[in-house]
Image (tube, rainbow, N blue to C red; front, side, top):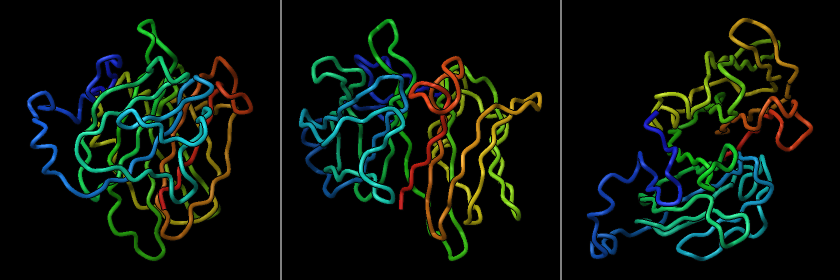
Length: 246
């Protein structure tokens, strides 16, 4: 992908910060307003803290599968412009760090994922949250595959009346899919669904999850963890989590 695989000790949120080096402090000061930013621990690290401009903004450490805020309101309000973001497990060693440009009145979701690599960093992904108008009788949903060893999978949400499929989903760090494409939401019908996961050969993984998509809701589904560590139940096994944006 235009991978935000981020050489994370020096990363610049690659897909989003072209031209950052030439942006002056004067230009930054021209930006007014606020942005909404959520953070999710989709990694194997047991606790992560979030810092913006070197101020700790997370009130409790994020465990694997946990997103900031609460269901329907996962966001921090940050000043628009370039914000220096770092994510750390101990307050000292930065597993993710860099500048991210935030537009006024825009929303973003930041994911730290995978395991700590030989450089001592995690991968990171930044999605723009722009679902648009959600009409009555609709919900909006997107899915990102952040499980490193699961391979290409088909994700299916089904109930008595409807089936929603995300087909041929590969681990995003191994693809060329852009963040702008991953950011897109699709319109689905609200309701109670059961999630099942299939390999592309048709075999079903030993994992299922019930989810409720509310009328007017906006959601991100993401998979994380490694199948070699089991399915569900364990923090670092293959799991699927749901973020409710509103």
